[in-house]
Length: 218
Ligand code: HEM
Image (cartoon, rainbow, N blue to C red; front, side, top):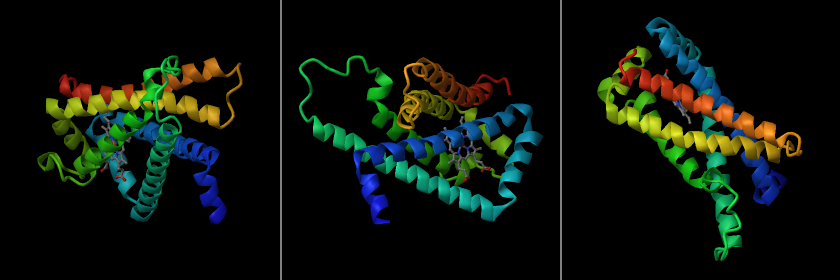
């Protein structure tokens, strides 16, 4: 256990932790978006899917706790690495050496923390019914989504969160590929295109669901 903690505390251990937990979270958001797209197929399809997910409570709780631990480790390690990077270079360069790094790479902490805030809000909304409780209905997920995204304020928060998630995922996928060894010159352009497409598919799929209601298509 001690070696694991020491590995996690090291700089390379921190990067590997971010890559592995980031990959697992990426797989979750991809599966979640694909599952949610069933909303567009109508109430019977998405409600049957939600019922299926809730039909094995023991399994659901193992998955929920696993996801929570992975998410907590990802956030904690990310904050630590960002703080260490800042401490290593407390005074900014006279000429910004990271000029070539784009906005997404420089803003990983910001887009990560906004995603964390979104997830807290999202759980309070759809899972716990603590906010917008009049719309909460875990027995009819289709009605819950339709009523919620019919409010422009809620829809705008969801769309804005997906735009920030897009930037976080695009840079995150590129970084994790590099940390996990896919940084060969031949693969780099391919990884850049793939990370753009995957991040756009996840954010775009979620935005499509939200706008389909807001624009009155569903
Ligand atoms: C427009 C985008 C999204 C929609 C429509 C959506 C929809 C939903 C719905 C309906 C539930 C509740 C399912 C149920 O009670 O049966 C849920 C739960 C959840 N969502 Fe989302 N979601 C979206 C985006 C996201 C994103 C981007 C994340 C993560 C970054 C996320 C993370 C979660 C988590 C962790 C849960 C809890 C799962 C559980 O109950 O254990 N969602 N979502």
